Length: 397
Image: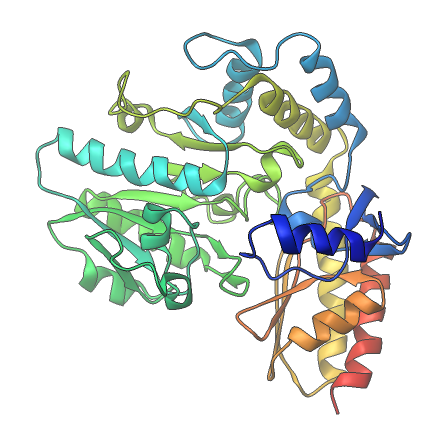
């Protein structure tokens, strides 16, 4: 089938809730994606940070295939080996905790919000309020949407859930003023992805931990996008040496296979007794097998070290690019979370890059975003930057 035929299928049979690029991806390998017309693209967006090992990694495909011949689904009424092994790996990589598995980032955030209120409810202290950050993004379900600090996502969905409020990201003074005796938890992305690659300082994260300890408030780190090695450490909060009470994961965790997780300190997650929270498909054998393959590959191939090397080189390249173009306002880089803020809208630049065979995207109207796989080659990143430079020469006077 060609692009036009597939577009007609979507026009008639698929909900129109996405603004899609005008191509149909039919196959991919590594950073290469191929459309229905046979055109190849350099994909430096990696399925919005999901394809952490690139398209169709053999190790993940093999793990899923092998698991599928044994057990595909059994529900959480039973124990399974892959789920137990994955929980052990995640706890070893993060902090003393226990894992609850779900299917997506939004579901992981919902679990965290519910857990924070259940924990405080068990203490009978009247704490129900959640403080989130302006410019944040936590998902599209009602709890996650209520925590999200961007009005454009709220439009048409009022009333949102009560007892949520928002303060400026990175501003400890404003946060301290917002905390009251009703505050149950504070939720923060250590790096705001959809917000424009806004990077929390180490002092800010340390200040958060100190404030939460003092006020007996739970600290939730949403690492759905910035976790799993994306910033050059397994988890972005590790750059500051800060441990949360609850952490949410998804995206890169399954290497392309849907899976999410919530990790929480044992004394916190104990508030979820049998029957209090559940997910039919959460932590299924296929998803856990995929995630275990991802973790093993990142370790064996030393991809965190590689990602840091590529990140440093790319940052130098982009800073040089900034000197060439006055319309580049700022370069923001945390590992392989890369944002190029422009002084003008970037949508047309993304579209022109696509025509030239480069896949990136634009957030907050003006921030060009790169989220390449952890195993991206430096040459591939340089090729992408050269394509962007070519487009900028045309589009920015």
